[in-house]
Length: 254
Ligand code: FE
Image (tube, rainbow, N blue to C red; front, top):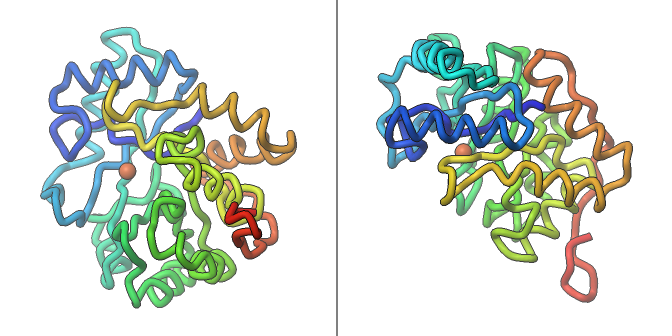
């Protein structure tokens, strides 16, 4: 199975604080059934200075260690990019990395809102042949308050990724229901771990798979995990027509 969003590289951001911790996190990935994983350290995040990190080299070094330890996991390079106005230029300069050298780029908004220039940057990316993936929209306060913001971005060619921890209820029932509603309404297309740490922020991969296999219709469940694979292989993900998501009279997301 393919995980497209994970903070696996050691000593880079808020992921593993040592090489040993990174290898332990990799072992946990394998135990949970993941065979290929895209390392997505933060880029342009205000809390982490990661611009000087050579991600492809660090990934290559980690892959050597994984082979030496007989841990059957292959790591690919990527970034989780805080949206900035000059993203296209930074991608062209090779600073901001797409996922596994594909057409897909993982983009994070500040947790409280969506920058006013998001639509403009997304339009530039898409017209240049890239596909923006919005990371964990279910945790973004502006999107929770007004899901139309996400609907507009998805309707204009972006896709999105919800997080295993959200889907199994680690951020509460409301976020959980919202994440499921996004998947069911064509507003989220991928599921990833966003794992950082073996105990504080683990994969929750198997738990999430079990939950979704019971919760979603079979075709949608299969489609989501095939989409994860499609991103890694630079193939087109399957997209369903988006529907607006809203709260019903009980205040539950539908
Ligand atoms: Fe992340």
